[in-house]
Image (cartoon, rainbow over all chains, first blue to last red; front, side, top):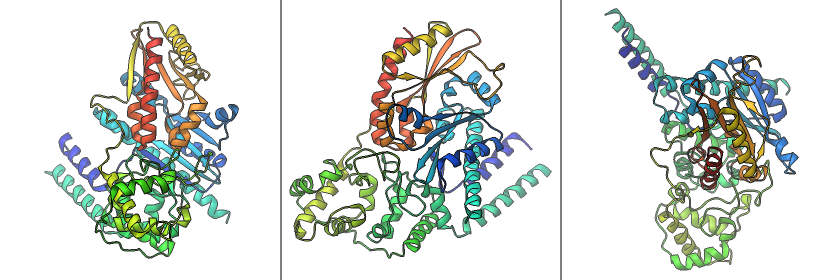
Length: 160
Length: 351
């Protein structure tokens, strides 16, 4: 099949299957569980998607140390070494947005998960290789959050 | 012809499946969880978004809900869901109605005549305390206080927002002013406080907000999501200069963190790529009141890379671009100023 025809088919399929809500700049999810436990689900889901958790930033700890009251507020950083190296070598302008990160925000007994949608960067980088990369990250992030939601829903159901 | 036949049969299958998806009745509950629950909470208690309480839903029309979903609230976190199908929007509205057990109120779209000048006087006297003199809603942030202390439990709605004004007909605003909203603490002004004519004047004044421009500067077409600067110094000197400059600007600097750190073993990590991370917790605490989702871009970081040819570069997020991804005008206006601070830090570090 020629490259042009392949692209046409891919484009047609993409347009046909595109979600109704379109790409938002922020991907968010809410789960009915305390944030301390949710972080473990997030880490596990990230690793199941082939990423490595690099570290967890304790934003709440910093604020508390300085005398500000804060619920749990953490940021989980993760990535794939190959991708990080490729980006820093070929597209250093993007290195500010790596590793990827998920903000874990406690809201009483529930937890809000928020991620910057990498596709927010797409309009600035028309390069085809990057467009594919942004799409892949977007899809992985959605899947990670979906699996966290599913895992927690299963846990909650099993304990009811 | 074989490849073309495969292509066409593949495309037919795609159309067939997509057709099936398009015709399946959308599930309003699932759509709510996917698109609304994160901000409004699953039962509509509110969080980053305002509460969607039964009493509030009983006060509005289905058209108002549809229009609010479609248009969002520009500059106030709530996104616009323009790409949703009509069936999906209707499904969410139906779900909200069924869950709350409320019936919509239908409002005429006729405009209400009133004296704008008198409305302004009355507004300043009775409404500005919560909705602010410009109608933008007093206090920092949006939604409900959950994680941090703020001046209001429920942030008063921005009634000058173009999304609100396009969704709410005059008759609806008149009713809310007249009967109030117990659920959010809005008092009723129709029980002897204001006459019908005075309420109409207030409505006319609120409607006059439509003519206002959004107070957010637009971006230049050539603005990029990051700034890249070449350092005149070697790697170590550049890192030291950046840290000195940040300290001088009253930022606390976190321990060094290499870009690849944690992703690969410590012997293989590239030690000539470092993220200098920094924070001013006082400023951060204030910013989180305005925008609770800020963590998606935290912590502040200047990345310093040594290229293969020895050139050292500094990569810094362009806050003017990043802030606009949040649909939060308060954050945009604040970060436009912080961006100037960042520029000064880099200028000093790369002298």
